[in-house]
View: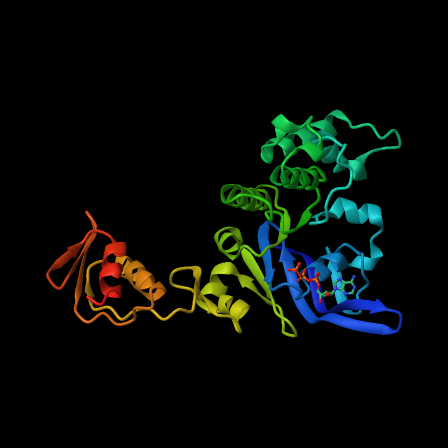
Length: 324
Ligand SMILES: Nc1ncnc2c1ncn2[C@@H]1O[C@H](COP(=O)(O)OP(=O)(O)OP(=O)(O)O)[C@@H](O)[C@H]1O
């Protein structure tokens, strides 16, 4: 059964400078579960990192409760917290001289005795972390001499080596290419299941979050946190709440974000998905009314219109654009 490992109850957080207090998050309620990947989404400046800072014990709880495995977070000392929680932030790594292997080994720090040497078990955990993030072959390279994406993977490997039941990652895929973004998130999802870890990822990558997360948390300014099974939030139309004042919207049928462009009216015969892409192209060319019916043939692709045949959408759009 899934168990809540981090819980917020009526939690309020903020920053204080001198006498000036600024509340950023108010009355949050949430549970982070074991064996699941949860993605936290929300626009810039809404307070995602602020929540992570509070979970790391870097800023105090202003109001309400923040519980880690049932205990008040403030009751844990720093060693207990580092064995419970591994965090990957977006902050740059300072020691560029360090090798990838040395960075990942730092993940074992909470487990080392006074001698500071890694045991055979520690070395094995480090190697497994390097293998699962596919950076074993660059383990002896310096952090200053590898790509941003490789550095990001090294940070994730360090968190894996820490072997904590809870992992929190702030935009772990920010510098990665599309394939690597999917791979890393897929990896985090499979780790959450195979190692029964609770993984919270802050991300702006909605597509990948929808594909890989079990739970979503949607944070909005001055509103309650929306939390639930990813697919429940999709079918309830709650993903769109991310874009309430924007010119984009989430199309829950297509599972993607779209510009709120008017689509051309099209009386068509043929596959609906082909008609959609034709309408899209027409909309981009500001053509919204197509007078006669269109017949779309899929394989080979062609469009029949008023006795003419077009072998590409481009030809068809150009014809309509020039006024038939
Ligand atoms: N150290 C600080 N002192 C005062 N205010 C801060 C501090 N750090 C962040 N804030 C403010 O708190 C609010 C939330 O910031 P936070 O970094 O948590 O947002 P975020 O959701 O993580 O944004 P992003 O997606 O851009 O990373 C912002 O208005 C920010 O200006």
